Length: 124
Ligand code: HEM
Ligand code: HEM
Image 1 (tube, rainbow, N blue to C red):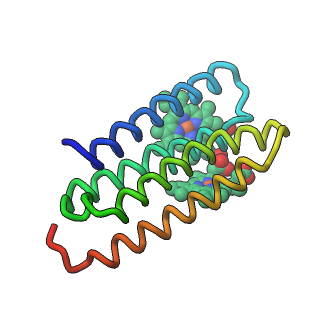
Image 2: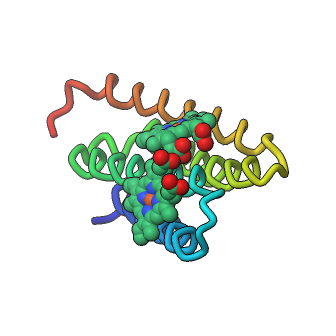
């Protein structure tokens, strides 16, 4: 596996490793205040980005398009802003990073909708 599918699955597995480490820390410390950051790093990071990787692995011609690369760049930026941003928000430091991360994450999903619909005629 190379290219966009590899990038997605490699980054998704690293998100999972960090999120699970945070989960173990929360369980061990009995301090669950960062649970929303853990949940979203797992779901928007690990689960969603791994699904993108599997989609692009199944659709190699689509993975070569500029729109696909812009989509994955936006999804990556979204995860990297949203998960730490939620942590900053629940710790009462700032909500700004989570707000920007939310918008970038929604934009990335809009791009994925465009990728899926514009390439619906391509064979898997
Ligand atoms: C080593 C693995 C993991 C550990 C030790 C762990 C630990 C935890 C802990 C301690 C909480 C807080 C529970 C609470 O306050 O009620 C939590 C919440 C959560 N975890 Fe994990 N977790 C792990 C993996 C995962 C994975 C792989 C996912 C998803 C793919 C996940 C999704 C969630 C979600 C969605 C919540 C929020 C639940 C809620 O607020 O109701 N976790 N986890
Ligand atoms: C733009 C992206 C997203 C934003 C801004 C967002 C925001 C939020 C907010 C504000 C909450 C309530 C947290 C709380 O009450 O502590 C929440 C909970 C939750 N979200 Fe999201 N979310 C996003 C994407 C997603 C996605 C894509 C998934 C799943 C694939 C997801 C799964 C969950 C789950 C399981 C909970 C309940 C667990 C918890 O309270 O921590 N979210 N989300």
